[in-house]
Length: 540
RNA sequence: UGGGGCGUCGCCAAGUGGUUAAGGCACCGGGUUUUGAUCCCGGCAUCGGAGGUUCGAAUCCUCCCGCCCCAGCCA
Image (tube, rainbow, N blue to C red; front, side):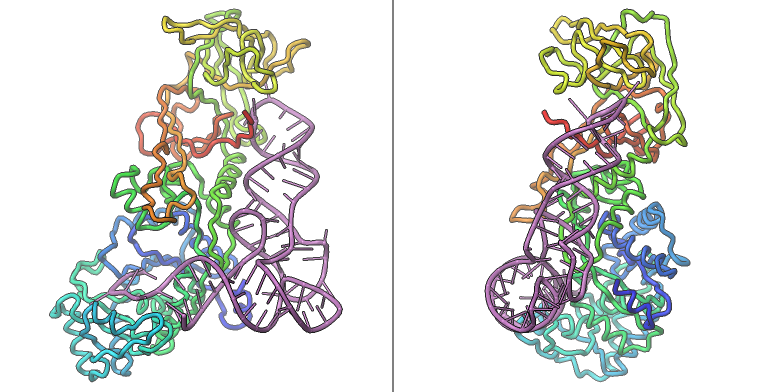
């Protein structure tokens, strides 16, 4: 990459940083940034800092700081030294502001927000100099001190950099360095009544930490000249450089903290960690592993194009990881009782089966088998005219293989008063466990099952995409108009094999023929979240 | 409109003068399979447009078209 060139001379060690503002939870978009920053540091044997860009107490909160730390750690990354905070540099930043005033490169401006906008000009017209621009340094110094100590009302004054009001780059038209906010900061308390702006803070934070490559997203490209201006005009300890790359956009979801916060605040979802959320915590609760997230991010290009990645690409990496790492299990989501007439009611067997079809390092499991079991209602059809090719499941008079167990035949159905099928009576084919079907018997397919007496009751939560429009943000309507009303399906009364009765959140399973699941971390009872279904190419 | 950035298969993308224009996702065929999964094999673009330079261009030049970002005392 671009770094390679710089490796040959410009910098001797790659130091990057991941600098979130603690104003929300991390989401999949941040995961890319995290992977890029930590990944580059690792690749070049450098280091990466975790730094909170906490320059605006209005939107920030301790809760977010903790959640972010947890998420980065969960993703498996280690930052250099202690966690850094922009607020740790407030004193340094303040003295640099004084320095610029003394250099006649900054001044306290008394234009209100509206007038400042007018003076700034437009995209096509240059701005006008503020009437306070040539104020003596001593006066600005005094005023800044008063702003700091709380003697000036909010909105009355700002400290601005004196650059060029006619610059074609609007960011260079005397940008605000400090604004008054008489608000307690989550870390510095009531110490400050003024807070530095992003532009005045970010590059200097990088310089203080010795960051070599300050990597951010494309929308900051126009801020780069300003970033460079501060670095060039201040006695900073190092000269970091900013590089931009395209942020990750995924279709069928939103990745804007503002919108995610709205979904949470207005109760469209259960919280930041709702399994339908694209947040790191939501994905974790959903059952997506850090490994899947990292491989997905690694598959993404670090380029200047701003495209929209197909959710299917992310899903591929989720499945890819789970397929190779998740233990197999059987869970009947829609139980239908099957009674085996030729299998003694008091007889039971226990089949020892592999935890994974091609990994013997995963523990084996035990499947109790008996006179009665459950299969899924969808695995039985009364329509015996369905061809074997079209319906590879159970029909009256035909055979099917019970996964890892016997081949059985369905003999008749039992109905309740309402005519609803409540039971299938069938029979096993002797001596077919672990063996090929005997001559003359051809099972239509393989279905999953669970012992009727020796299995655990559970609830399964199935998720669909949160939005039913590929680009929820696009168009006139609010993204809220495109929320999928059926994004969550709760199914109670499911039966899972006994061995999973004490499954824990963070363990991943493939419920064979259904999908990948993990135990929900927020429920006391046995609840499984469907991470993602199996790929299904079955054409109906 | 001023400034900045970007346009290669349905999607994400390699590629910076000579390649049959990588790869992944998706999709479509076929094979294996006690998961209609996995796995395996095969198929799938002339590079935003128009000119030009060159023996030769996605790669260089010109013009045009389109998309994104910047006018917060947000980041």
